[in-house]
Length: 130
Image (tube, rainbow, N blue to C red; front, side):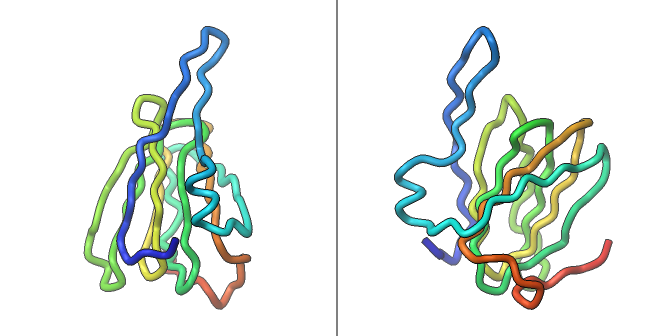
C-alpha cells in the first residue's frame, strides 16, 4: 500500500454513553499494509515532535487522545497539508515515504498512534532538529 500521495481517511466513531469507541484500522487497511510496528507517542502541550522523513516506510497516524496539529511537507519541504485531529475530527493520515511530518499537541495528554510497515531503523529516517 505504498502510494506516492498523502491520504486522509475519516474514521468511524461509535457513540456510547460510557465513552465513545473510535475505530483505527480495519481489515481493508490491514490487508493492504503490512504492519511491522505500532507506537504510541505522548506529546506535551504546545510541544512539537518531528520533523521526520521516512525513506522507505509508510506510516499511518491518528490521535488516541487529545488534540493534535499535523503538518506534512514534501521532500523539498513545501507544505502539503495541515490537519487537526481530535475527538470531533477523527481521522487517519497515511504518510508515504519521502514526506516530512511533524505534530504538535494543542491540549494536555495528547497521544498519537503511529503504525509503520517497516521495523524502525535509524538510517531509514531523516530528522530535522527543532
